[in-house]
Each structure stands twice: as C-alpha cells, then as structure tokens.
Image (cartoon, rainbow, N blue to C red):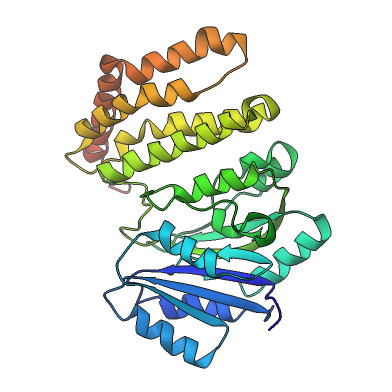
Length: 334
C-alpha cells in the first residue's frame, strides 16, 4: 500500500451527536489519498459503534481504542504513533474540515517548501454567530514571526517525516497541551507558511473543554502551567535572542493567563485569584528580557501587579463592580 499523503487524527470521546458529520468531512476530502485515524478514548456512548460502522464501509478509516479515558493528548499521541502519512492534521470530534482542506494546504506546502502550512477557521458560536479568524494573523506569521501562530493549531497540516517520533503532546497535560506541541514544532525549527482559505469549521459547544467563561480551577491552573512549559521551551532554545518579537508575544500570553481568575466559575473567583497569585512568581521567573528599559521598569512593575495581593484583590473588586453594573444596566429598547 502506498504511503498516504495526509493522516487525519481524530480523538473521540462521547461524541455521538456529531461524530458522523465530522467523519464525513474527513473522509470526503477532495484529496482521496488519505488515512483517517480515530482514537476512541473510553467513550461510554455509541461513539465506538459509529466509528466501526464507518470503518466497515471505508478502509481508509482506522479505529484505535483506549479502554479507559486518558485525555485528548494521549488520544492524539496514539493517533500520531499509528499514522503513516507524509503529513498529518488534527480534527476535533465535533468539528468539520472544509472539503478542500488537504488539497489547498498540500498545494501551498509544495509551492513554499514549508513544514507547517496553516489556513483559516470559521468559528460558529453556540448562539449561531459566525466569525472567521483574522487575515492579519496570517500576515503576522509570514511577516513578523512564525511564533505569531499561537492559536487555531488545528487549521494546519504538519510534516510527518520531520515531526513524527521527535515531539509528542504531553500526555499528562489537562489543557493547553496543543499549544505546547505547536511551539515545540515551530521552534525545531520548522518553516511555517499560511494561506487565506477557510479550511476548518470550529463548532463551539456549550461546556466545551476550552470554554472561555466559567472555567474550573483545574482548567485555569492547567492553562497557566502550559504557558510556563512554553516559556521553558523558548528559553531552552534561546528564542528571546533569535526571535524577540515572537518571544514577547508568548510572554504576554503567559502574563494574560495569570489574569484567568476572572474566568472562574461563580463562587470560585477568590480561590482562583489566590491560585493565579501563587503561580505568578514562577511565570515571572521564566521571563527573559534583554531590553534594559523592560528589565528596569516593566518587569518589576508586572511582577508587583502579579504578586501583590492588594493589587490583585483590587482587580477582583473591579470585576465585581463591573458585574454589578451589568446586572443593573437597563436593557436596550426599554
């Protein structure tokens, strides 16, 4: 059997309501020389039956089974280990690929010689609102730094021959392992190229694993830990010197995650605040900065804001006031 052009890896966990549509979008690619590897991660619904039904009709679908739920990172690693394609991509079990996902990204890979090729995503919110990822993101990646590729990692194909067996997702990570993997890949280093086509449909669900609001303490902590891991990777490879623009971008992202307490569930804000404050010194200690002004003024100020309980609780008070104002505000049209 010839080597497939692309391996599409799908971690599956209790996805019965939408799994069939995701599989159809993967198997229905305009490029037919592909393999789809679905890893059932201990589902307790009919997901595994759906996978086996599709596999019986299309031999390009390979089904792997985890007897117990081990998490998305472990499922993706299992799929990556089993993949044989020259390129690989990831699809979440409730999202869709555009029909020409493989075709347009492979064409750009051949044209540019890039090792990672990224398209754009259409994001559909639970209330039906539709937005598309910014064209400016694509420009920044190409013109400023490949490390501007700091989100929507699933809109890309990755060179399997250069990545497979060299880096993996962190099995024990609860959230944010995808971005750690992305940064490790980009800084191998691998060449990144972008196209403006919409290649991926991200269907936001209520209570999704990466929801922005009402996050659990475990998720808030996991996102901070993932950013710390990214900073460690960047420091080890001296990215602060070779790509200061990209390094500053990820530094700002790490600092932003320390403000994640305001996304905590109702009633857990103060506990989340203490958690973020406790994590702040570790994150701040990882930040490398070669700019004298930043070293003398910016970083000491940032560290004070992040570690001074009085300032942090002042921020929490502001958020509380904002929430109260929203409740009191008269609805429009009245």
